[in-house]
Length: 182
Image 1 (tube, helix red, strand yellow):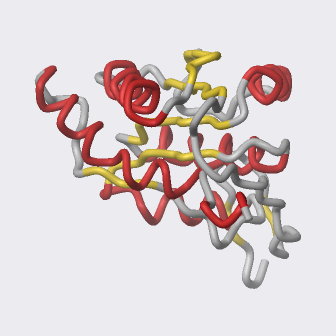
Image 2 (cartoon, rainbow, N blue to C red):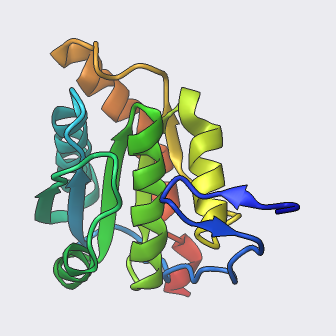
């Protein structure tokens, strides 16, 4: 198969998918219903909970959904995606701290964006290529995401909080567009 790309989800595609839609952005997070899509990797929950706390306390968001993935290495079901899209106007997901969970975070993000929900996926720097290839396979070659240093799993509670605080600017930039207020 010339120019075939092996899709880690199990399918082989000879052609790139059509461009995946990107959700409209809010002008700000003030009053936004935010959902957290948490994988089961070590420190993912406290990391995303800290991101959520900062979004609530400093940016006026409201956490309306928390979903923990049953399998960090697999994309979520359409049913879970539909429920998250109904419960939240913005999703923060991660933490992509390994290859399979990073790929799944990218896959989930592309599907959520297509469902009309802006997403900030947080991935460790070591897995940029994995995320970019999965997003490209899903039709989102221009997929944007936040990064943090690798690894997250071994951090202390204080280090997790500091890392979460360090990505807030990127998270906000990924899910908002200040010009949307105009």
